Image 1 (cartoon, rainbow, N blue to C red):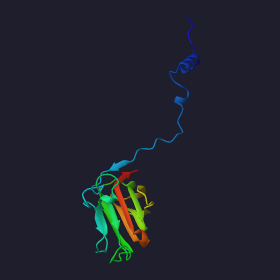
Image 2: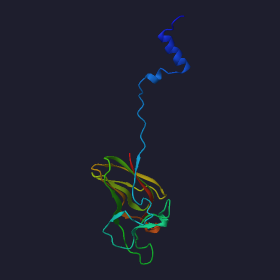
Image 3: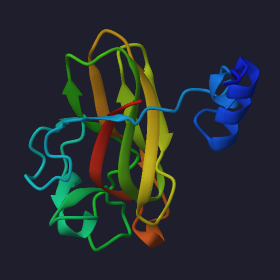
Image 4: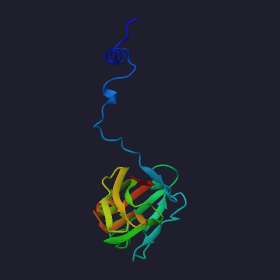
Length: 191
């Protein structure tokens, strides 16, 4: 019986699909991106009023941040922000420009890049998704008058993150009842 040569066996095996020449070569494709890791946060949909959310503002008036059915994306409630201006209704107080934050703090995080994501809409100016991961404030303007996903990337160093929403000189057109914003379904993800 005639013995088959190694090159012939290699060719025959590749023809019938036992292995391929390309499978032995080093890939130049980047590794697949890993899915972001969801971080558990408390009351992300404002169903328990504003529990777990801290408010910082010098404002002491009637309006500001609240949990309200008008602001929901899912569930029963969402975050509502409103500041009145003279002209909104009879005897309306002048509450603009309005400044303040509503946020949560989480400790024990891995250092790295995080994504704050929420459904949000805004009418007026000066309303942001906001975060601080230990180095500096990061913010991005809420981008639409229609509820849609807004995202903010920020870096955590030292294991602590503050994240939420900020109003910086919030104001706007009196005829459209600005400023106000709605937010719901907040998520924090490790990228």
